[in-house]
Amino acid sequence: MISFRHITKICLLSALLFLGFSTVNTVSAQDGKALFTTNCASCHQVHKPSTGPALAGVEDRW
Image (cartoon, rainbow, N blue to C red; front, side, top):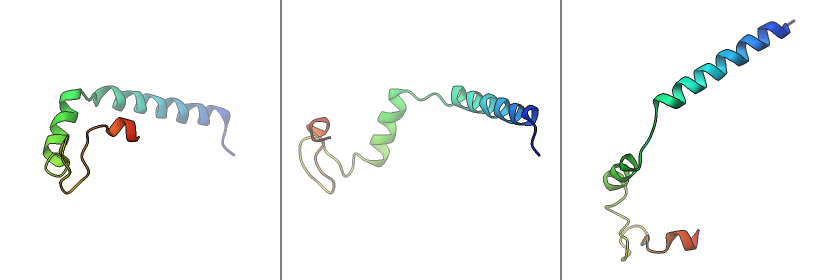
């Protein structure tokens, strides 16, 4: 049978690991721009459709 102390240790360890990894991997807007430029911009233009749909007004369509 699992004891309350064992469950508490597992929860505390999981929380510490989660917090440790979440603070190390900070992402900035520049990272998103670079990701978009590298992977998406060739198919998704802002004002004209190409392979993918145009992105002008994308927030309104969402």
